[in-house]
Image 1: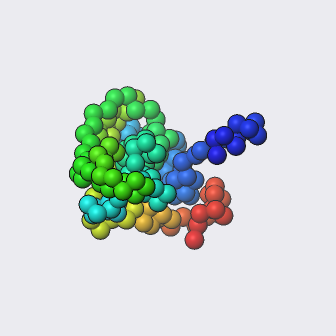
Image 2: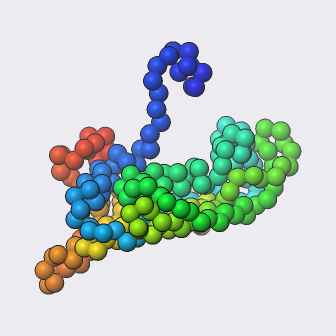
Image 3: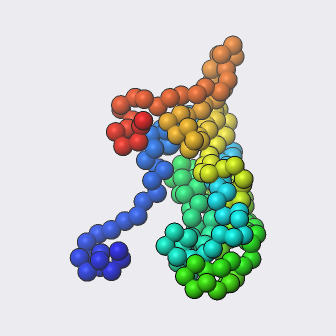
Length: 205
């Protein structure tokens, strides 16, 4: 694909598709409006379970994500990349990071060669960070969370309000607004159906 683009001499880009989900776009609008006030916490995770079996080979067309030569990294580059992009789009630049990674199964048979090879991608990553705006961030990604196929969530806690989003319910946004009257104050689940929201015709079902 890269060679074809160079040969054609055309512009090319790869974008992070979760930005275009209407509920996530609405989070961006709410954060930019200042309604949350000062942001204290940002947390996100992306959990899967499809590589738990030690019998799963690595490499080849379907399993290139387990081959460092093809993928470049494991869950950090594959799953957390989406979480990080969303976080920086919604909450600004990240100032510093402290992380741990783990590869739970150290060797796998390569699907292409049949040889047992060392696994050099990360199966799990956890990191915490500071954002430039002073907020603390916590991020986790793994392919070893039994029962999760694609749990991707984010939560933002501000001085006036908080927001939560879950890919499993991608058209819903949860919001807690402390400015609400005490008698009705609490988490509200908003179904995004307004046609004025960007990308509604691409995502909403």
